[in-house]
Length: 468
Image (cartoon, rainbow, N blue to C red):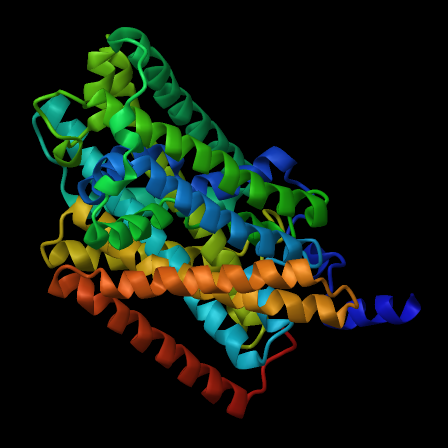
């Protein structure tokens, strides 16, 4: 018994992470911890932007694609939650991997996860720009300039993330709660208006084309990425070894059910309409009009724009804590590790995260990329980073449990299945590029990871990294 406890102490340090990192310990309730993961997903944006894209590829089988995506994320979530029972650290998946696998895999996970959060932040910043222009054009007949909009979104997100982690999570919680509630009202009222009936065509899964299946699944996976980001709050969550594992699994399950219901209802709602779901600029707005609650459609559009902002905030918060943990591990300058004594937040890391999101989206805008295209391209890039981190954590779990004397064939089986699933999704993503721009995204990601590994090798040679 004492030997096992000693081993666990050597491999993991789940003791007071806040004391080590200068974060405010135990300030976040279970609901506020869950809000971080929910906001990183930004569930209210999927019905507006992602489901129409999936429908263009999978047609009436859209709900089934989301069912498969939910199952895949629950597999990954199981592995992440098992690790989260062992260690509470701001480094999240990076810490889990680096504590178990050879150091180079920890570095790969860190760089992949950092890019994933930053690219997701850039994606939803592009989405916020899209909705800001859509709403301004609708009500003011004017399109605001992109750079000031992006600057405002990133600056306010960075300020809130720096000011107070509790304020940050509470802001994200209320934004998402209101947005999701408005969508739920429309989806409940819609069948009352058009009549209750089972849409049998959506259960004819043979209608999904083989060429559209893979790309549709990848897009559906993008709806979930970030569901694990509650793990970045290991130093700030109350009872983190219990709260965070629950938050990860609850987020994957509840948002998965929400996406399945939304996709089924949206396809049903557009049945027999002159416009197509795949070509609608604001599908929920149109469905609200059909349900006889048009004002809710306008509110949902506003909610989607604000939800995009909440996701930028969540990604800034998560990326900053990954930067902080990378600095502690010697991968980045130590200045990124420092926290503000009053606010208990990593100011330099937050500023860098917000600045990188802003600069990335501005660079794309200056190249003529629209807000909706930024959402698409940055989202496609982020998927590779998340899949890398998910696969490495799933692969590391059996080794971590064996080191602690907790080997389980069932857990090992789930871990292997999770690794195979993430690799399969990555392969499908590689094969699904339909144009030269998307085809270059995997090459960009591989070049980025290669640079990250080279940087790790140089840092290790000149100044051996601290213990992960």
